[in-house]
Image (cartoon, rainbow, N blue to C red; front, side, top):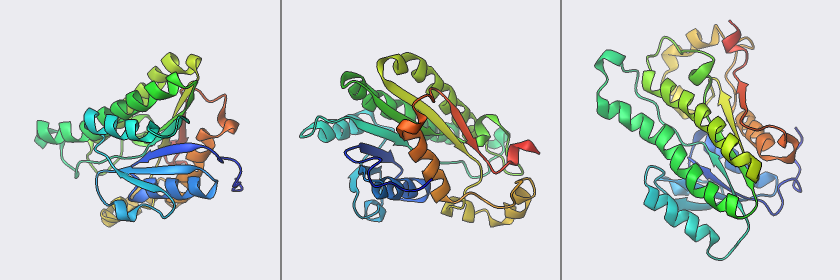
Amino acid sequence: MTDSVERFANLRVAVTGAAGGIGQSIVERLLREGAEVYGLDRRGLDSIPTGARGIEMDLTSPESVATVVSALYADDPRPVHLVNSAGIVEDNVAAEDMSIEQFDAVLGVNLRGVFITCQAFGRELLARGGGAIVNIASMSGNAVVNYPQRQSAYNTSKAAVTALTKSLAVEWSPRGVRLNALSPGYVDTPLNFLKADMHETWKRDIVIDRFATPEEVAGAVAFLLSDDAAYFVGAELLMDGGYSLR
């Protein structure tokens, strides 16, 4: 898809997890296409791309999210669209050894945080006539169960993100707030660099024999935010390089 500076002109978009990885690339892509972007993260605001407004936010805290949403609308009534790209994964913990605290930590960010942000931003979009929300799920949520890593909490959280997206789409899309989920496969990010010993195993099942780039994921997010995706409602867009076909 060719970048168009005009496509997102006058559009305001908030991106969670904006200080690194996929979130950082999403911010860069939206800026290139003319959007006014707010990069939301709990830390590392100096890593948010130049041109975006970095804002500290803890997406697991309803109070923190509410404060940010209120500030975004304090001087500007235009709708703020949302991309939920923040996420964490447990460090290869066998299910029988996982503590409830570890399980809750993953679900707290990957699911509870997505609900909190969708709710807070969604309320304002509903009040302002509509908008778009894109939630980053994962092929691990529905298409496959990853191996050889063990990540039962992560897989569960991402399946729930897809279910939440569909549920909110049914409730909100008739009132103008369009929600969709994007489910990437393995992406070339610092998180995956930490598991270099697994790369060859993963690549054996990727039909096109490479990881996705963060920029490719950002392009898919831009599509789902755009008017070109106006008939996508509660969809899960799978982009896994063919991994789930094998």
